[in-house]
Length: 226
Image 1: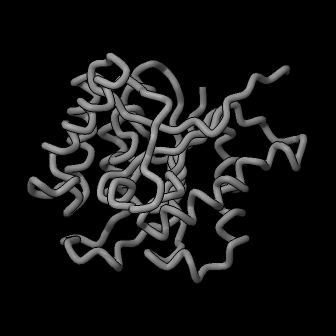
Image 2: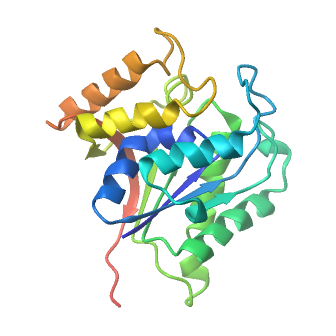
């Protein structure tokens, strides 16, 4: 299966689904990443601003090839002033290139404006196959949670209906991948501390009787008749 993760910023993919990405690749699936933004101009805690290289190293540690990454150049924390159609078309570009079966993106009721808009634009872009019969059909579409963004919203809490087991190995791989991003990991009790990341994986796992898990909301899942 081909999985495409559409995220606003480098490190969102690991925070939301680092364990899943690691395990999917171990099980011979293909994983592709579409970053809407590839700069860190609004991140005060960044030491080295070369965020693209950090993303490549982080994803390499999970098993993702550099050729399977698409970097956008939309401005950080300014998606609300970017032409909407250009955002949608960039995601469509990723869909055309990578031809995913499953697409995963941000939860739309997220405190981060870039996350919200990425989710809204992805809702439109994944319908490409319905507008163009030549495009591959999307079989499944899901939303993920990102600590210190999804959990901080006061608008409609994240209520997952899909739990993906990552086990201890996947959890460790997720934390290691985050360590490649300057400032991504914080001291406890910040939500992005290793303590909280493990606690969330424990909670999501226990909700489905699994050994550590990442949680998602399934927007749709469909059978294809090819």
